[in-house]
Amino acid sequence: MKSAPKSRDTPRWAAALAAVGAALVLAGCGPIRKPPHARPPQVNPEQLLAAHNAWAESIQHVWARADLALNLPADDAGAKRDRYDVGGHFFLAKPDGLFIDGDILGQTVFQFGVGGRTFWLWVKPSVNTVWVGRRGGAAEGRLIISPPALLEALGVFRIDPAAGREMTLEEFGRHAVLSEYASVRGPLVRRLWFNRDTFRPERVDLYEAGGKRLLMGEMLRYERIGGTDVCTDYRIRFFTAGEVDMVVHLKDVSLTKEPNPRIFEYRRPPDAKEVDLDLPRPVAADSP
Image 1 (cartoon, rainbow, N blue to C red):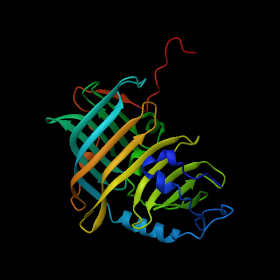
Image 2: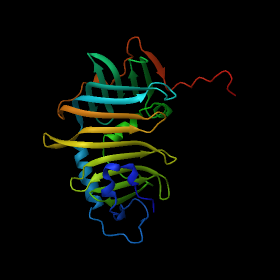
Image 3: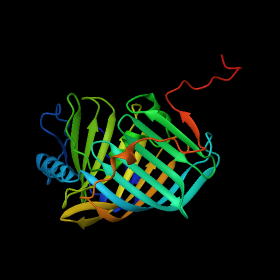
């Protein structure tokens, strides 16, 4: 059986993780991986998935103002870092529209967008550079903020067991932890931590093919908005070369006000240097 999540990954929940829970494989997702002394689970996996998916489907748009705290590399080597505390906006339009920006005194300092087949990241103060690429290709892995990973970190999408993948449900204190593996004996792909009482996600871990953790997204606070639970405080960390740390606080949130579709269309910022991540990387003259 795959090893349980380590308590050092979540110091805030160290006491909760001390209680070893039962492991259960979801029906239809592959052979059972059962520990020798598994206890009957307190959470029904089908009920958990049904409740989560119904909640996720109830959120199709998010329009909000946002306070952002960003800590990201200022150069390719990650030796220098930029830190910003800015106000801005957060717009989500499913299935894959996302726009986050931050400004100081009306001047944009950070902008991240995903829309249609394009994504982009614009950092202005230190480099005034925009990195742009096409969805679904190698370019997504070349950006310090992975577009599909950031979307998953929000926790507001359905969970549908993929063919050939295996899913296990383990219980640790107040959390039901859903782990997804690439195959029956394959590597860990994703791990989601749900509150056992509310069935709301409180953490998402994503892993690369080699087993290295790519991202940890924490849902720190939920508010009731229009009868729906909405996460309004996120902390998202990308464990890429030169770690990226993003804290997002949403306010003035609306689930009925649809963002303008044009906000998800890439337009090159004036005077900014553009780096096309789909183009081959330049090779040094002395490279073999």
